[in-house]
Image: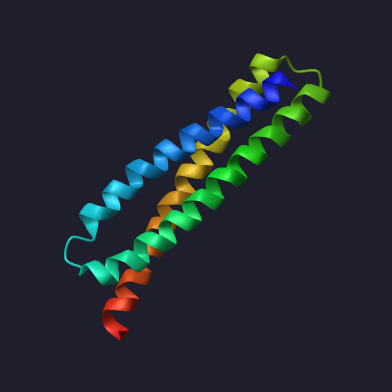
Length: 111
């Protein structure tokens, strides 16, 4: 049980760190937007990023449990699960940042 929890927490922390980096990149990218328009996009991004972080840590937890049932060692299972779900989470957060910028643009044009 310990490798599963460690992998889930590690994956969650890595995904949160990636989300913070992407958040600050979004702040720079949305420099021309007014504050009220940018708030909507940033809010959507934060919600989606938190959901992705939780889902990626759950996925890593489940992958480690599957690998442990197939008699992988705890370290090997962790070394497989953490990078896979960290990279997938980072890619999904980039997509979420584009969605957030799109929401901010929609708010700027229509409201």
